[in-house]
Structure formats: structure tokens, C-alpha cells
Image 1 (cartoon, helix red, strand yellow):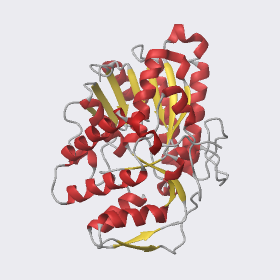
Image 2 (image 1 turned 90 degrees about the vertical axis):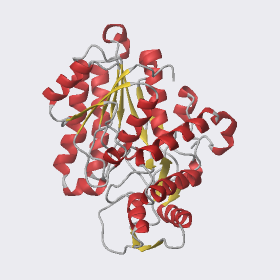
Image 3 (image 1 turned 60 degrees about the vertical axis):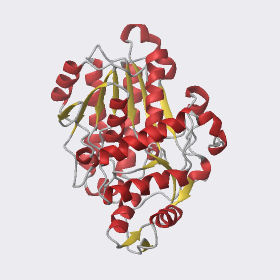
Length: 369
């Protein structure tokens, strides 16, 4: 709490699902926040429902516009930058590969270029994805040093963004010259996040919540696919912890970091749907979608032992509880409760659990090969 009080923070992508949760959490911690993003997509959306822009500076701008981005950054003069703006959907990347690459790759270039010319910035966390790895469909989790790749345009664009971070780190923010530039840059790769307020299309949990609220039959693609599922607050806490270490220890914590769930919480899509349906009630139903769909990876797991060993971070919400959190948020919102109140309540409850995480070490095993 004391670390974040009064800190000047800039978030790109604050109108998105993860950006909205992070903005609300940082406001609770007392930060001075500026957000840069496109207007939220679709109705409903968490940004509008939770009135996220209240109490912060919110700028609707495209990160592909370097001039506008640089001007806003120079005016706000942040100390910490969280770069979360992206085209985040695999299936949409097949429909708009050019837009996906221009946002995810050149958008990252623009953010780092703006940082390079803003002398107030001391720490940058670039959020990418677990899908940036070259997926070989093996059973063990991916580590930060494994090869980057990406089959589809989204995954590949995020691997490209990781290369951009590495190139800028080597060229302009080199650790051996930290005393001169005083900017520490890291990338963060999270698992498949779930949580209340996500209405993105072609994501299994939002699709399920839409179907269950409407008493419709959910169509499920790839029920056997395995993903590293985690509540949205888990990686967000990782980003916060990483930013603190970058500020306090500079170049020692640069590079890539995985933030994933316990290995036992890397489950199939079918397992997730069965748990959600059970939590929702008897009216929830689903069936396999047998139509042809674009390629998606079958198996993906993350090794987060580096974050545990060096940052002291580990997941604290078992997947079963993360699903309960998620279903409860949608159920209460659909019954008329206020989205901002619900979100802040879950943030506070999660923060209490996280503080006592050492006493709950049995809930999160450290992954290993």
C-alpha cells in the first residue's frame, strides 16, 4: 500500500478487461493514474459498467499514433508504465491480421519509443501472453527461455512484441548502462485469465456466462484443449510485484516473467465448463461445437518457478475458487448489483487472501519439468 501511494502510473489499454481491473486496483492503492486506450468495445463492458474512468485521467487514443502517445506521456510524466493495450483475440487475428500486427507489434514499439523520450519513467512492464511460445504440444510447462513462435497471427504478434522488448532493452535500456538511462524494462506472460466483467467474443468463459444468463445452450469448441487458467487478479498481482522490484532494484529484474496457475489448475475446456455449469445451477447447459474452426493449440502450460524464486510470487486462488469468483460476479451483476462495487469487493477479498498466501502454500505447487 505504501509503495503505490501517490505513484504516477500510466496504463495503456485501461478500457479493456484486464486494464479495467488493474485501474480499479491501483486507484484503491492510491496511485495517480493516466490511461491511454481506444474506447471500450461492445456493450456491456466492464469499463463503462464499473465507471473505471472516475478518479483517473482517461485518454481515448490509439497507441499506433506515436505523436499523441508521446504527448500524453510527456504531460502525465509517469514513473511506472504498464503496457496492456492489444488486439487480444486469437480468432479475430485470423480476420484482421494486419490490424493485429500493427497494434501488438508497432504499438509496443511506440510505447517503448515514447518511454525512451520521457525522462520520468523508471519501470516498464510490457504485458504479452502465454501464447508467445513456439507451441510444440508437449506436456510440460514453458519456461521464459524457451523458443518464441506462435502459430496464429495473434500468438505470433505477441512473440514479435517480445522481440521488440528485447531489442529495445539491448539497444536503449541496456542493464550495463542502467546508471545512465535509469529505466528497467520487463515483459510479463500470463495464462488464460478469467473473471467477472469479460464480455469478449470467442472466449470460453464470457461465452458461457452469456449463454447461462440467457438460458441458452453453450456451443463449446475444442473441449479437450488444455490451458493454464487463472483469475485475472493473479497475474495483475504479479505485474504489481514485478513493477515494485523494477523500481527498487532496477536492472536486476529485467527480462521475461511467467505468471501462471498451479500445474493442477491447467485443465481442459470441458473441465472448466462443467465446473462453471455446476456453480451456475441446473439451468446451465452446453454441447460440443462440431463445426470447422481455425487452428488453436491443444496443450499449453506455464512454468512460473522463476517468479516464485526471485519475486516471491505464487498463485493463491485455486481454480475452483477462481471459477466461483467468476460465476458469482456474473450472477450478482445479472441480478442488478453494481459492477464497480462487485469488482472492488473481490479485489479487497483477494488482497486479504494474498496477504496470507504463505499460510496457504499447499494450494499452489511450484511447477517443474
